[in-house]
Amino acid sequence: MAPPTAAWGTRERYLQWFKPTRAYRFRRAVPTHLRPIIGQSEWTETLSRDVPEAKRQLRVHIERTDRILSLAEAGNWPEIDDDEIEALAEGWWRLFQLERSRVITNPQGLPSWPNGRERLDDINSELWALASDDDLSRSVRRFLVGPRVWRDPQAPDSIRDRVESFLGGSKRAAQLLRNTEAMRRLLRHCRILHHHAASGYIGEGGDRSHAISRILDMIEGLEIDPRQIVVAIEGQSLATKPTPPLTPLPSPPTIFPTLRLGHIAAEDGSDLISMWAKETEIGSRGIYQARLDMAKFVTLIEHDDATRVTPQDIVRFKEHLGKKGLAAPTINRYLSAIKSPLGWAKENFKIPTNPGAGIKYDSKGGAKKKVRRLGYSDNQARVILLAARRENKPYRRWIPWVCSFTGCRLDEAAGRRACDIRRVGSTWVLDIPEGKNEGAARKIPLHSKLVAEGFIDYWRELPKDGPLFPDLRDGRYGRAGTATKNIGRWLRQVQKETGVLLVEEPRFAPNHSWRHRFKSEARRVGKDQRPIMSEETSDALTGHYEGKVSRDYGEYYVDSVLRPAIQSMVSPFDIEAVEAVPEEAMGAG
Image (cartoon, rainbow, N blue to C red; front, top):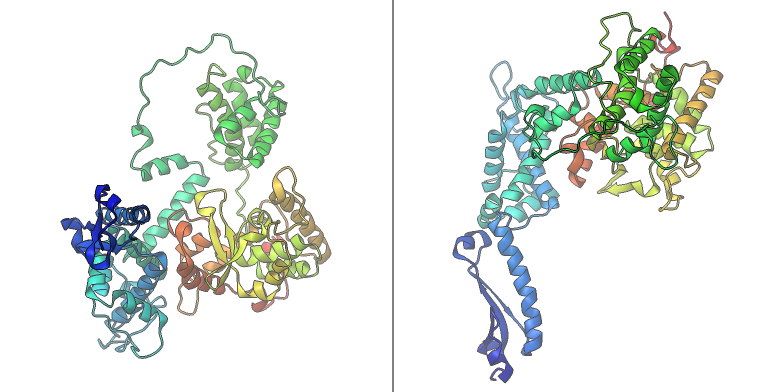
């Protein structure tokens, strides 16, 4: 059969009449340099005998092969999905532990586990941990190339089967090794597994913990601007950040119009706090606090005009706060609430000078000693959870239990919607998609004790497009703000009824003491004299960590790392009760 007459004039690239099939076909050569990556020299596909239909089919194949060529040029072919990457990472980790455990010797110099162990996280990591990213890369590449010796090659094993199905042919392994994007993801997953058990490469564990603690202490003590850390991570410093083009700046006016400070919001948004908050994207709760702090300042200086504020006014406010016996960090927080809007006003030519520039409270003594915030004791936790069990209001019944077993902030739990409780793989999680910082976005597995308590049964009765706690009023600062006030009020009532100290600022507070308890429990030493949870995992669960682990973990990481970590937390009801609350908790002495 000859092709239709109209076909002779098409001149479509990659379209040709193929006599053996008596139809059109798509034929496209693979560029020579990409043939080892793609694994073939050309693509051919049979198309329709009808010219218009063949052209339509041709476009689909051109788009498909264009995409493959683009990925191959970028080193990202063949495509490998996250499930395959996670299976390969777990397979590597399993064989890595077997291999490393076999070379660990006892004091007599004999192998401690000649047949290998499948867990190393309860052994001193100095005996088996890798030393660097290069070591990790070499180990993973050896695993991919093979041979891979599994402990029980005949026993049912879904991970082993998936790994061997994927890497069964040398060609597939070679393609993966050339896929730079897939190898980057695989090495990242393997690094997560290694660091979760070893707390880093050899020698890094203590340094990492010390560095994190030191940075957090410096930020909390206002010794360093967090922005300095950000620009350092981005490869710059505040001193070397690119300077803007030398374009003429508008000359500031010699007379500045009155600008209300904003302790009371202007209806048209013309006050300083409203303008500052709009441009800097301060949330409603932050605006509320800023107005409260500014009101204290306005009361002291007895006027509400930003153009009239002087450095002497700022210093007088600082001294006024110092006389009240406030701690240095608290005084500096108040000063920041005044100085930040005024600094913005100067930068935007609303006032002639910045009256707060360079002023800070640097106490060398004399101020009230800083009181350390405490986590709830076992006894306090039991009192609160038992009181919650007796409640009918859902937010009182469940928020204390959620905070106790997840370590999340009270306002994070209160602000969730029903759709934020979901399954990731086989694990129920509380999904927090965003928060006060980048690390706050996370998925927290639900402890089996919380599920057994009936939380999932409660959730199943809720409309899936509604709030998780519908009895919380959506107030000025959302359900989270309402919950903070209401639960604090409820806990004071429980405190009065039981005689157990539960609320006492700044030591015990509903929004913080559960988190402090969770962090303390995570540092609890197990039978092997090591913390039950790595600091990196603890930070990922509580939203303190701002690295990759807390942002992009998937089903495998939730099931294999985070869920076991949560399950390692002991319920306060499973800890032997004591006769009385510890003296520290009761404020004795």
